[in-house]
Structure formats: structure tokens, C-alpha cells
Length: 221
Image (tube, rainbow, N blue to C red; front, side):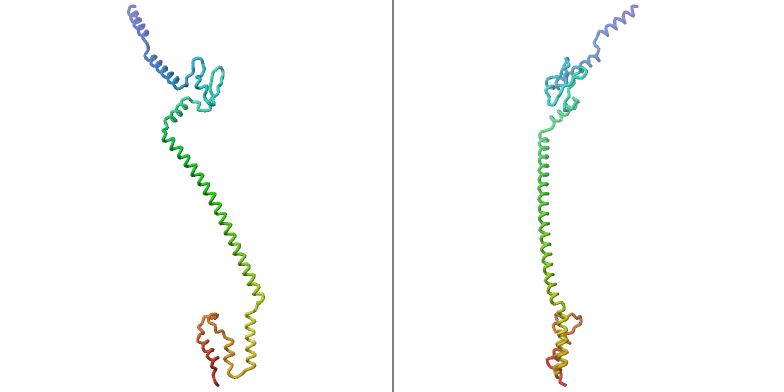
């Protein structure tokens, strides 16, 4: 029995001492509560929220089943809000300034591109109207020239044929009124001595010169 009393007294002494694990957990809870109080996310023992959170923009209070809740337009997760705030605070001034400059630059480029596009469309429309005007003017001139040519043709539709018939009639009259020494002269009347108007592919210059010579000095029989 004495042995059991000894073990019992020892056990009572150990239980009387403070548990290290319980002390550590209590210390951690105390530190977490202090951090929450510093960040403004703790709830008072009375169940009410701090005034700093109640005065937030766009916040509304709701009571459900006797519990107090706060509804906000922002992040509902406290840790997400803290992370967002830390990120905004951690962004350097140079990066924020660069971001604003890039936004302004892109807006300026967009405005300039829209202005250039409008100017190009206006210029293209004007050039197209001028081209249509030139084409219409050219068409009207061509129609007028064709009309004049048609009128001249209808006035003398067979001018070439009439000229050829007149030359043939003159030749026949000359044949009927033959006189010695005028034969080659009558032949020369039926020939075209203009080298430019000749459409033959063969060289007839020598024949032309012979006929001219016979016309000027006919052969004596």
C-alpha cells in the first residue's frame, strides 16, 4: 500500500504541473487573436462588429438566427481581402506609373487609328467620285465623236465607190475620144502614185516610175 501511495503522490505532483502542449496552444491562440485585432477582423465578445468595419462603403448588416453577419460588395473572405490589400500596398510607385502611362498610350493610339481610318475612307470616296466623273466625261466625248463620224458617213456612205465610178467613167469617155499620144496618160489616171497610200506588200516603185516616164514622154510609133 505504501508503494501505491508513493506512485499516487508522484502522479499528483505531475498533474499539478502545467501541461506544455496546452500552454503552447493557448499562446498561439493569443497571438492569432492579437493579429486579428490589429487587422480589424475580430469580433467583440458582445457579438458586435467594430465601428471601422460597420462604416465601410457598400456594407450592409444582416441578422440571421440571432447571429450577426456583415455583407459587403468586396471579397467575403477575410484572408483574400488582406492579400488584396497587401498586393496593392506592395506595388511600387514606378510600376503603377508605368501602367497608367501604358493605358494612356494605348488610348491615344486607338484614337489616332480611328482618325486615320476616317480620313482614308473620306479620301477613297473622293477619289472614286473623281474617277467616275472622268469616266463619264470620256464616255460622253466618245459618244459625240462617234455621232459626228456616223453623220459624216451617212452623208457620203459610198464616197470611195462614187470616186472609183467617176474615174472609170472618165476613162471610158477618154477611150471613146481617143487621140494619139494620150494612151499612157489615161493609164496613169487609174494609178495611185502616192507611196503612203499604197497597201501592197510588193515593191512597185519601179513600175510606178516607168508609168510616170511613159506619161511624160510617150513612145513614138
